Every structure is written in C-alpha cells, then in structure tokens.
Image (cartoon, rainbow, N blue to C red; front, side, top):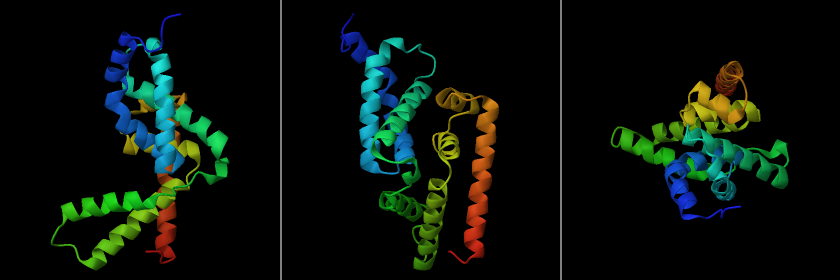
Length: 188
C-alpha cells in the first residue's frame, strides 16, 4: 500500500482541493449553521479528500469535494447534534458581510432606516432558509449559493436530476411562502 502523503498525492490535493476550499466552507457553514462547526467539517473533509485523492477520476473537482464535505457534515451532525437542531446560529458574521455589501452598493444614498430594513430582510431570509428541511436547504444552497448546475447537484447529493429540480422548486416555493407570511404578520 502506498503512502497517503506521497508528494504526488499532496501535489494533486493542492490542485484538486485547495481551489475549492471557499465553496467547501460555505456549504459546511450552511449545513451546520455555525462557523466553528463548519471549520471542523471542512478539516475532516480535507483529511478524507487527501486519503481518497488517488481515487479522484479527474472529472469535476468541485463536485467531488462538495460531495465529501456533504458526507463529512452529516457524519459530524450525526455525532454532535440531533437533526432538529440544524439551524443557523451565527447570524452576526452574515449580518456584517451583508452590511458591508450594502454599504458598498449605496454608500451615501442609504438611510439608517433603509439599512435596518435591509438587515431585517436578510435575517428573515437566512432564518427561512435555515428552517427548510435539510434536502431542500442543501439543494437550494448548492444551486443558488454555490452555483452548481442540476447535474452537479445530482452528483453531489446522489439523487436523479428530476429530484434536484423538484427539491429546488419546493425550497424556493417554501421560502416565498414563509417570507410572504412574515410580511403579512408585519414581521419586517
């Protein structure tokens, strides 16, 4: 059996895995709902990827890595949390990122009231996404956040493309319904 850390494996790891670490972290963050937990998941996924780099067929490195991250996340969540606790707990980092983006978009035109409304809208959207059932949330994040196409999502989640399309449509419909319900209740 050859060494898991051969120079060839390390070189291949750096060309296959490292360019997609940001996407790996983003997916882990959405699946775990916590920055520190996502870092743990990505670390475990990287170890798995390094061990399995010899088996990488060279087709789609990003989808291959995200599949590993997905499995690592579910393993981690199974050991550390019940499935009912999959919520977004770390909104502060998201809020800061969105506040920075909003400031860059409309530096002098944005009033404090508009900034508050934008922050509340982002929180409602984040909360609505976090409440989606895991298969819907993961499909939505892979498509709308990670930008994977249907075929890539099908590869990552190991479901048919039709199921990907159905889950995505249902996830989006649930988000729209949830946000509309919040607005009807005056939850701005």
